[in-house]
Image (cartoon, rainbow, N blue to C red):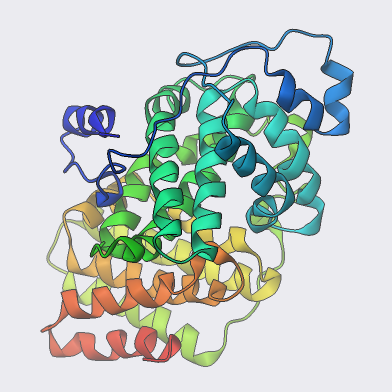
Length: 368
């Protein structure tokens, strides 16, 4: 399926059109058709709490409904509700939310349903060998494309009704953006991990507003710790990690000494936030501590990444070392941190001699 909606949106924002820089699905793959409402087959397998609402009509939002008749789509929903949901959970208490509440919410929001099916399809692809995996990658791309326009509309039109769905799809979008470059290798395509991560930043640069605006709305605080995300006790980092982050701060001060103070402040804020993510992960060992950086850095820093400003890319490389902590722990992060650090090492060399120390730490961290 062509990604025309993506290209139009990118053009309107004067962005380089990449949308994960992956071509549309192969022509022989049948695109998902439209879903009849109400979806009786899904209401039978929804969570137990769905029974409490079964007699109530389901409101519909976004584009025309999807068709949920094929065995492929039923297979994907089964995969999500039995396995994939676990890889999206931050802690065991999240299992009920991702296994039951979010699929029920997806009956109301097509972009979330498409996201669920896309990430489940990628999960299956990660477990299969070509050519079987290719079919599931194609399906994931089709559903991911379907979700794009209604999700962008929803993220700029947050309400108490849609904030849970928007937040959940933000997590799914980040996971897909991290997983796709590695899985695309099955299609014998060279996908840039760096480019795909930057596109995720661009798609979610409004996610900070989700945290800020919708916090009082999030139902039952499904996605927010009662103590507050940053209110947990932060660990003291090991000396090497502490030195690496201090080195970044020093480079920022030295390299941008004569530059605009605002530009120096943008990179400084990103480094400060990254340090908090490292500290939080060291204490909690959770996925959210790592993905939080993608969702909460300033849009000015995202712009610096898009412009390929070297210092911004160097900071991103250090986040890649943190992402590497998830290697072997969740399917969607396998080899992703290593790929990101490796790409950026090549992109940033040759470099100023003062950078060598900063480049060596991420390299050692991922075992290169």
